[in-house]
Length: 481
Ligand code: NAD
Image (cartoon, rainbow, N blue to C red):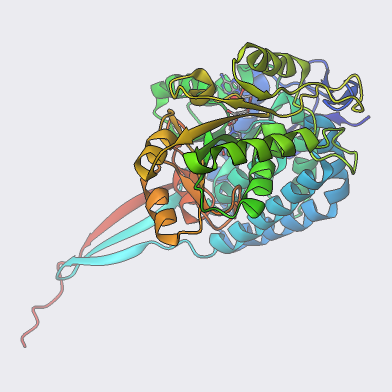
């Protein structure tokens, strides 16, 4: 079995000992990685700093564009291997991981284009007085990513960081270390990539992540993960006032009006709720239904949930894979067991492998908008169904959590859809669809779902500074008209 090592300054390094990751579909060993330590983190940051200051990368947008294009090709070439390894490490279905790899390739190609179109501006603030505003790469960026979309989320931060001209240190999640190492290996083999521009350090804890967060030579952090960890990063990075991009948890509501096309809406809502076994920041976790359609939507969702084929992530029949591990399976099952109005209770499907961490989807009716089922991110296949009266009540309900990452509205009334979309405090609102993400379209969170945006042109912002250079010409002769 291939060992996932640490990539520092253009070469691979073993860390201290080895750790195993577990395949959530079977309970067997999925991969082995070698965790780094704070010395590795320090060496990686120093390499990234040298590569940044050396020039030839940070001041060469054409080279960066060419490297990003070649990286996208390299990821495409290992598509099959990457899908197989990531399916066994994070338990997402084969089709889901194929989609992820495609999205990562699209992301890198998009930012290759962006690298060559980063503009400043010039303004004549007074006669002969020129203000030049130039955009410069900020320096060394730490990219810290979770396990639940290990391919796309790495590309989503790496693309804009490299396009901007930064050099980077990646810190993958322990669960998906080999997926990450395969990506780094493919991208690092691009001949024009200077050593030190791309580094990656594994870990099984939080020492390496913390070391990056407090490091004086790290200028920016692009973190994707939980609200809890983000709080620790926010605090730890305060001493050096780092630029932060935080992409955090969600509690996405699907707001269903009685006039919605339910034949289209419900299968899509079920897909939105069960993608990655509900372990997606944008997953549908609450279905808010107008009173007139409440019973019908509840009955039909329950039927969908009961009929869903929950099975091994690499089984072509599977419509939903396992959750990441037994501890999370047990945590989620306990939440369902302690709820009062459970319409469908998830459990281990009869024909799924016995050693896997399976929990079929649960549907719970909730009246109380202050309930933890409504307010907290549960991160698993548990969906609440809640009733609303009118548009104002729908908005109030949708906004009843501290999160604000994503939401969807389902109605045939286009004006109403726009009104609701504008009134929900959320970084993304889909109308008659859910979970549609594009490299070109900014995503991010309102409230405690995050700070800043990734994707699109705004994805560059955390990786760049704006410099004002003022020039007093002084010699410009007066113009006599
Ligand atoms: P997590 O916060 O536990 O871990 C994320 C990363 O942070 C991992 O690499 C982890 O090793 C690292 N880490 C842990 N402690 C750290 C510390 N003290 N300092 C620095 N790094 C540290 O999150 P998770 O459980 O792996 O992922 C699930 C969470 O991610 C969910 O809340 C989900 O909603 C969120 N998420 C958000 C988005 C988004 O785009 N908004 C996308 C995917 C996942």
